[in-house]
Length: 279
Image (tube, rainbow, N blue to C red; front, side, top):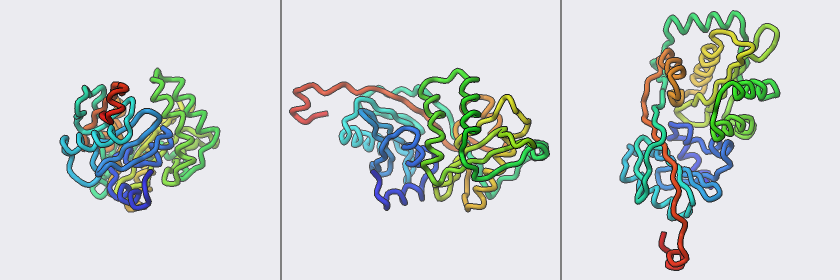
């Protein structure tokens, strides 16, 4: 676990969502540890190593040393790594996913005319509630979202644990958009636990009650809340697909950080190597 001093250290330097232990623990039930300048999450027989250094420039050699230390400490059966670039000592760790994180620089950010037009259009039909409680309506919108997309089990499990995250982490906030009848049309989840960054975590839009511009109106409110809290940036997350990337670029977000991930299994220890204390 992280000490209070370590928690403060992480919060002051966090710049990717995986740097928010409360979020990762809520969606995965893992336990966070600080390995030098890197966060590592341990679950039963597995570790997730976050290869984004908290206080120094990224260096593959330094990351490899920290990853080796984590493997030696926890002796996991499987390892997952996310980093700008991948390097796994002694093991094949080929990237199975690559992407880029997108960011808004709040002091410099001004929405363009098209975005402003979408915000005005949506605001004529919708009212935003900031800091809303997560309820049955939100769960139904998530269920509708999951039913409309062919998602893998791991991704589906993450979305299904959003209510746990929102309930367990005080720095998470829900922004809801309701129509004139009081129906929930869309909602965002944002994270404000880092010193300099807000994180745009999730956006769910109801297909049955779709209102054009709802996502723009909600992101506008997230940005306003981030400014109110003194944040310097909003990390809009990964590009994921062409549609989401286009939405983020429309808002003026730029890619600021590469992302790669891999997952691999370690060979189980033989009796001899276990007795000799060798990995």
